[in-house]
Image (cartoon, rainbow, N blue to C red):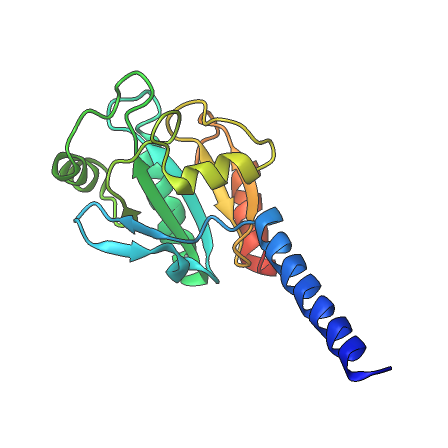
Length: 189
């Protein structure tokens, strides 16, 4: 084989490998990418949570599910030493049930429910202006589709992939959710 043919074959192989690698990333996106603003105004790179088991929840202060804050805090307290993090994302898309400012939300969560898990600045989780995090979560989870209400939960395994999606009515102490969290903590995925 002459040098030009060899170079052409190697070049095609490199291009094909790069394309396949990019396609694999696009076909299997991780939600743990990009910057988000915490409720205190500081910026956080979501990649810092890779290697942990992450429970992402869209929250609201004036919802029938608001008492789930207590259960989310209990989950966090029980499993944080094993690698669980809970991330709360206030959102106001459902019945205007999160009208407060970040400061008001932070005060409410800490004084009423003793929340110590990571809380983020209010974001949009559905419709126009949806945060990229929620775009990835809703498009890549099974089942895919829009968030239906406050306190919907997305479980991310240590590998950064979505390990489960749980409706708003699934309480933090629901056996199915607890079992999924324990499995993700135990097997790294």
